Image (cartoon, rainbow, N blue to C red; front, top):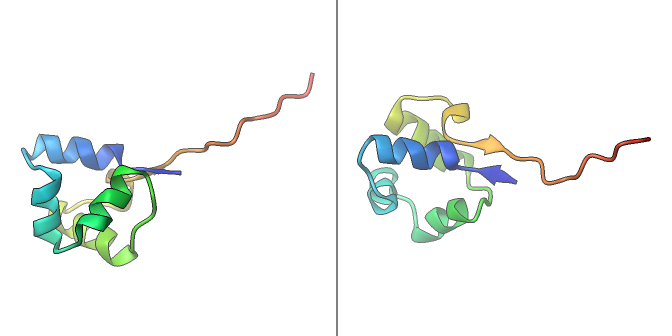
Length: 73
């Protein structure tokens, strides 16, 4: 699962809302909804966000592993 927690923190740091982000990168509300739910979005939108904040992909999204690690006893 993808987590956009770093992006949400970045928005707070820049005093921006998700609606501000939507307008700035000219994306649909569905795209913002997908990010809120931790779903994937297009590379085009990811690049637009990185260009907006002058940052790298790793500054706006992280991969969270949902799988449980099985330990052998």
